[in-house]
Length: 448
Image (cartoon, rainbow, N blue to C red; front, side, top):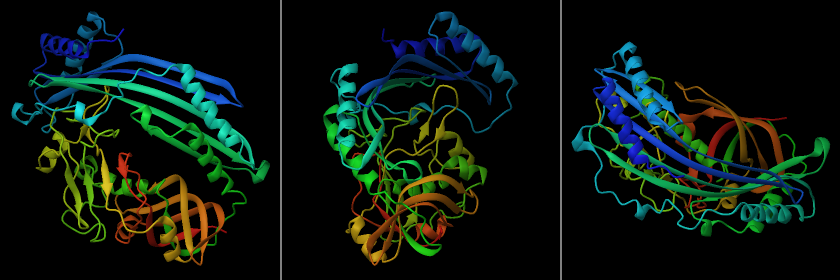
């Protein structure tokens, strides 16, 4: 039975006050997840989970403690509060912790405008199974596909509510609907695999299962006969499928937690050029039908669009209240949290300036180099930006794909890499991170 999450969070705050807390905030999350896997046209696995998780943070002076539970009984709420206050009494002082002031809190937001929840009914397991079967069949029926490793369909709904003793109370729900296929070509040591996956908030926005399965097969067949590329210094084209990971390293380096610890390779870069002058990076937490959208952050502050990088120049850090106080700066309303830990800064929806050329045109301009479509592992030096990752994709010669490659490593320095970016025009607008294919100059490719 659905819980009234606002009542649960208010009950936690009352219990915290009764236990001796000076201030407190509480978060309640109710979730439902349903996933279906098929294999060779038959149901292989069906899973459903649902439950409520609670988190309580209490303050005693400049000390804090957090406890969590998945039981909503009144006795549990009381015990949570008592344990949290006892833990806070033993915690060290932290001059930077604390709730938002009442005049900082969000008021009058419009959740409906964000379209975070599909109003249609939860799909029946049989409907999800049918989607997975159709996607699997579309991949399996393509000549050259030896097997389909997995075909999965899923649905999720997550509702959260946040309340603080400073007077904030608010929540929202979001849904997601996904479909994915992993296909294989060849056998033994000649085996290669690739995938396709799609996820949307609204069922109606999800591509047909046949389209997802066919794309997985197409990508897999293109990998047949993969071998190692030559070793040397070459340009690298990051395919749109994985280009957001490169921007993700920039996002991690400007996170307030890393900056406050002094462990960021961009520690001295505020107000300096970190991208080419033609590129900007914009955060917009209010984009409709996008998974990262939210009307307020995990500390109850109103979210708003902000410019992270403007014309190549870094404009600011990503901050919650605590890291902002450490750095003497206001929060950017970027707090995120679960039920078992305190808030921490995190970026939401990001969009990088797009270019005017397709990925194929970037490859043509690249001449000879590596077109990366997937990456594994990562070795990133947080203080220097030295970068090394395993990669696979295609070797390009004379501007055309020559052959698929695997088992290679790409390496460079992120500060230098990001300043040479050339963007494509193929970013997908429904994603939380809208990043096109990116061409990077002068990386070291280690292959054969």
